Amino acid sequence: MSNLQIAGTIKSIGEVQSGTSKSSGKEWKKLLFVIETKDQYPKDVAFTVFGAEKVDNFVKYNKVGQLVDVSFNVESREYKGRYYTDLNAWKVFTNKGDSAQAPQTTQSVDAGDLPF
Image 1 (cartoon, rainbow, N blue to C red):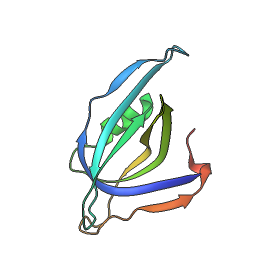
Image 2 (cartoon, rainbow, N blue to C red):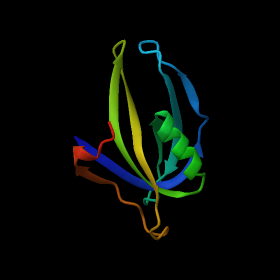
Image 3 (cartoon, rainbow, N blue to C red):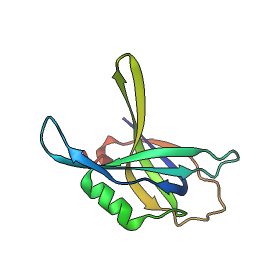
Image 4 (cartoon, rainbow, N blue to C red):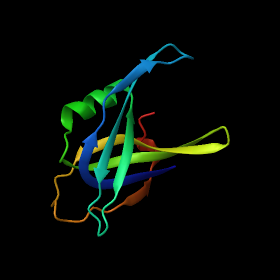
């Protein structure tokens, strides 16, 4: 499986959403946040953070305007003949590098780092 990474500045952080799974009855939490890349033509990229511990840590350690590196997976689902794609962030770190440097999108293959 390919793991992707991108860097950018947090542009917005959505409200924490929570609920209970219909199938298992377990509680869940998720959060949407958007980063802006610093490429020649900046783009907004929206990510989902899923899981109570990951959401709590994201809210605790991140804020709008912060430069971050995001490791994520791409997931698509089909519903009634249409496909929906999510970018699921599983690791978000503060980027301590030079903020003037343009972030690079990288791809690495190492499924051993996945937390699930």
